[in-house]
Length: 207
Length: 145
Image (cartoon, rainbow over all chains, first blue to last red; front, side):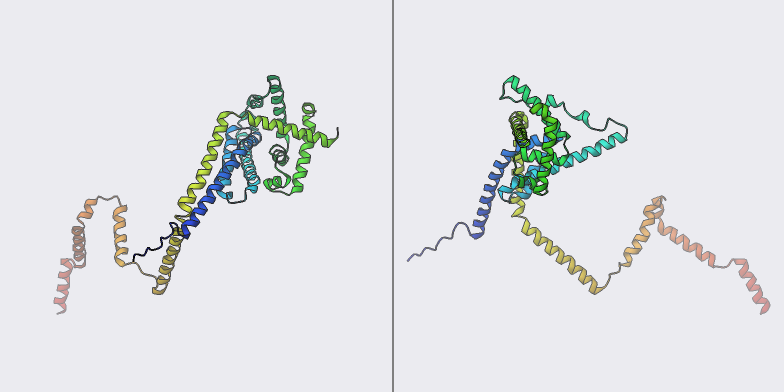
């Protein structure tokens, strides 16, 4: 009588768990891809508005993407936005700090004016095309955007961060607090002061 | 219009402008952002497959073995006491170093045996009294005798 040995399952428990892990990772990878695809352009614009430099903004976004994927991919997807913006803001601050040091060194050795303005692009020339609007409306929007960027530049860093994350990016207060590394009360205070300053500086353009 | 209305209007207008500027980003910038994103995701996937599962365990095991070997060697060394360097090594180093460091001709070191012999000859000559002194002593012996 011929007996057949029961065939072993093609995958032992270890392999099955590997496949599960692999499957979960692929799923996470796809989710991350969707999240980053959604956020990358806004993040770039926020970085560009803060740093006034295309290359520095690209670098900051790139660092934030790599750091998020490397260190926080396993965290719940709901936490990605504040974590991503926290990394981004940290990179922006690092870049601004490096610039300050560089400008001090340059001014110490009697170089340029030392405020870095001569390196910045012309805000009107670098303002993005608002392609969907009519030409006259485009001009108005471009002017309003330049005025906004200029007003934001005048704000203290924390107020600017609060306004960008809360109003422009649309994070809620808790997410903004997480991204800025402060309490929700501080976010509200920073935002209130930012709004007050912007009301005053943008009044003529926006009323 | 009260402050809240003004703030709300300002916030709405700012967001609209911001989103319009995002929509109008240069195609090159958008492509570069996309490329960066894909690279970041690839970079996250590669270490997990290659290092995370294939190398993490063997690496820790190797580290453990290495610590064991070093610890064992130190313990054994402590039991047996410090090992003195062989004398041949010391003498070799003390003899070889001047040869390497001096700027003398290496030919001299090729004939080193000859020079050593010469030196022993000189020493033996110096130890032997001169012939006239010997004669004096002989004379005194004779006188005394």
